[in-house]
Length: 123
Image (cartoon, rainbow, N blue to C red; front, side, top):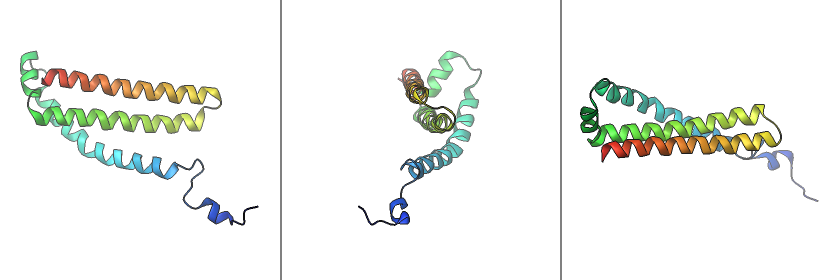
């Protein structure tokens, strides 16, 4: 028999023991996207509508390529966290596990394809 108070058992543990960490990651990625999104829009907007050769030459410079890669990485990670919260709140049973696994595969796969495309253009 454990002689722990309710407060002692609950200290540092959310309902699933990771709620604070999940919230913190969401806040950090939100702030990162707050900075990266305008940078991406301004770097991408400059080259929008140009020919393929001009786009390749532009993305061979390090700054636009790094901004695009960081935006894709942080954006898809933020997407994964947000959709995971939605699935946990509204889907139950086996479908919850399947949806979370599918969403994680989709988000990491999309991030990998985006980064591959940017690296392929940059090199």
